[in-house]
Length: 246
Image (cartoon, rainbow, N blue to C red; front, side, top):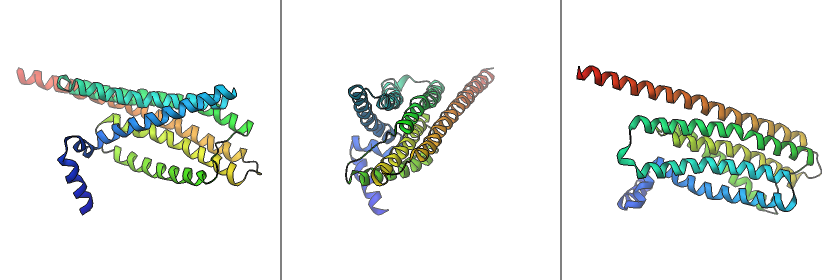
C-alpha cells in the first residue's frame, strides 16, 4: 500500500503522468495501444488470406477490422471531446456516450457473422491457430492474464460514469472470448494433433458466438435505456427551471 502511494505521489508531480491517475484516461490510453496491436492482426490475417486465398484468414481479418473500428470510434470521440471541452452541454455529452455504447453493441452483435463463418471453416477444414515451440506457453500465459484483467476491469468499469469506458471494457470482453477459443485450438494443435478435436472446437465456438451476441444485446438495451433516462433528466431540469423563473 505504501509503495502504491509513493508511485501515485511521483506521478502526481508531473503534468503528463498525473493524467494516468485518472482511470478513464488510462482506459482510453491503453485502448490506443490495443487499437494499434489489433490493426496489426487485421493486416497480418488479411495478407495471409490474400496470399493463401484463404477464406478463414479473410474472416479473421474482417473480425479484427471491426474490433479496430469500434476502438477507433472511442479514441476519436475522446479526442473530439477534448477539443470542445469548454462548449459542451452535459446532457448532450452523456447522450453521445450512450449512443456510442449502443452502436458498438450493434457492431459487436454483427461480429458473430465473420466469427461464425471462421469457426465453421475451422471445424470443417480442421484449421487452427498455432504457436511454434515454447510460444504456446507464452500464449497461454498471456491469454490467462488477459482473461483476469478483462474481468477485473469490467467490474471496475461498472463504477465509472463514463459510458465510453464501459464500451471499451465490453469490446475487450468480446475480444477475450475469441482469445480463449484461439488458445484452445492452438493447445489442441500442439499437444494432441492426433485426436479429432472438431467437436470440442465447435462447442467452444458456439459458446463464444452466443456470448458475443449476448454482449451486443446487453449493450444495445443498456444504451437505449441510458438515452431514455438522460432525456428524462434533461426534460425534468427544463421543467424545474421554468417553474423557478415563474
